[in-house]
Length: 258
Image (cartoon, rainbow, N blue to C red; front, side):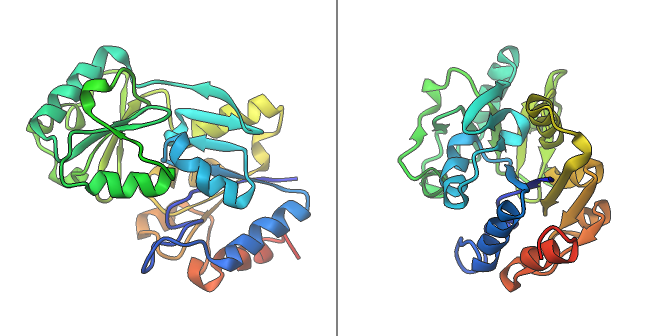
C-alpha cells in the first residue's frame, strides 16, 4: 500500500481555459483506491479552500496550507499558526500594500483589497463568501503578497526579510509566509507518523516550487508536464500533460494500477 500525495492546482485541477478536473485524473484516483492505495492531498491551499476539491475525489487525508493544517480521515490532527509575534509585521506590509496582500485562517481570507480579485478567486475555491476585512484578523495560518519573488524589495517588509520563525514560500507569481516549522513534506511526515505508516511508502505528485521538497524526499516524486524545468529536475519521473491523462498514465507506468 502506498500513500500518494497530490498537489491540487495544475496537478489534480487543471487551469487550462477554466478550472476543471480531467476525467482521466478522476479515474486514476478511483483505481488507486481500488488497488489498495491511499490517495491524499498536499496543497498550499488553506484547509477550507481544499475541502470542496477533496470532497469531489472523496479524499479526507489532507496536508493543507503548506503543512500548517493536517487532516487524517477528515479529522484535524495538526495546526500551526503564523507566529503571533510577527503578525504585526505582516499587517504593516498589508497597510502599505492593501491591494496585494491577504491572510488566511481556518475559515476566512482577510484582505483590504478592493478590486474584488481576491474575492473572486478565493470564493470560488471555498464555495462560499469567505472574504473579511483585515481588521478582523486574529490569527493566520498563512499570509500572501501577490508579488513574484524576483520583484520583492525591502519595502515589502516581512516578505523580503522574514524574521526567525517565518518561512517564505517563493512561488512563481506570489509569495507566501508561514511558520518556519511548516512545509508540505513536514506535513506529510507528521501525517505518516500519526498513521503509524512507513515514510518510505510515500509517493508525491506536484508542479510548483513549493512541491520541490516533497518531490525530492518522497520515495518517488512525480512532476507534471507543465512544471518548470527546476521542478522537473527535482522529480524522479515526469508525467504527461494532465489534460491528456498524464496522471492516469503515470500511475500505470509506475505499476500503481493495472
